[in-house]
Image 1 (spheres, rainbow, N blue to C red):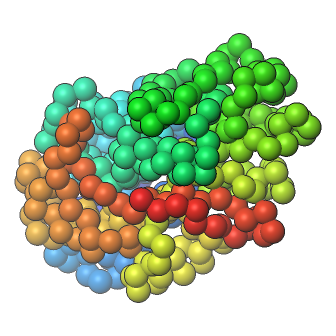
Image 2: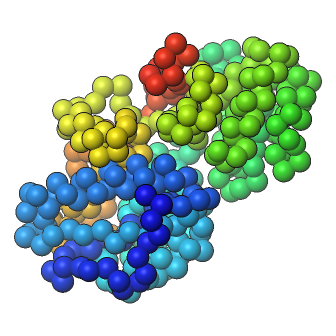
Image 3: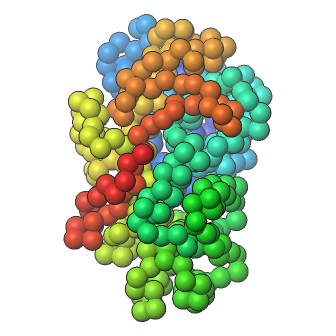
Length: 370
């Protein structure tokens, strides 16, 4: 799946096809495993749409571009895909990349259904062109903070990389914890080694450490250092952004990957549609699908419904966001205007706090549902 994207214009495309432009991280420093799962969901849904007759007899086709977690590369891809005549844009996992893509899509008048990025401020100004399936960061991370408080953690440290996404997450946590008697201690990972993080934790009486950092570096070395430090035997490690969801995390950390709570966007019990899609995704991926794969599938399910009802005209697609009512793998999808969020938002997908079971690290335990 590390194949570089085809050069512009090199795709062999069906002239009658309805095209959707897709943005996914497929090479480093992008989160490649997340990109692979997202693309698997998108491709499975397209295959099913085409098996059922396509869009009024026209095949649905994806034009895929690798963003490699680079906002400038994503913005350039949006320009290129718009020139190639895509009806809409879909995908992206990394919030800062999706933000750049959303800004370009808005400027060009290109509908963008964002699959996985959660940053509240996906656009600077309200826009009619962009809709989002993933829950806003403030919604999911407040549920995560609720779980921490309920488990008795009120003094929480965060090991944080500098980025808009991590700073936003830290702010959500701090604002939610403060009125409830909680405090947040920030550890700047530009200045600290994993070993120095352990020294800070031993000295500041925090009972939980949250990883607001990139994967695998420096998340994996931090986990290893904390797990080895006898002074920190009782400390909880958490990862609200979901690093432990992916098998690479478990492969790199082994037993140390267990008991690290993270957010995922799945219901406690899948519907018949969700269960069928899970089976097909598992076959396609060769492993259990993450929630990101379901987000990919649901993205195409929504776009196909809109295209059947409103055609491939970009303005009509954007006008249809508030009229969407589609059964997805994780519930009925509708978009609305949510205070503080400038895009059409599904409010809300199911949210869980889960971890890997220490007795069986390939099994997930649901700790809290919001």
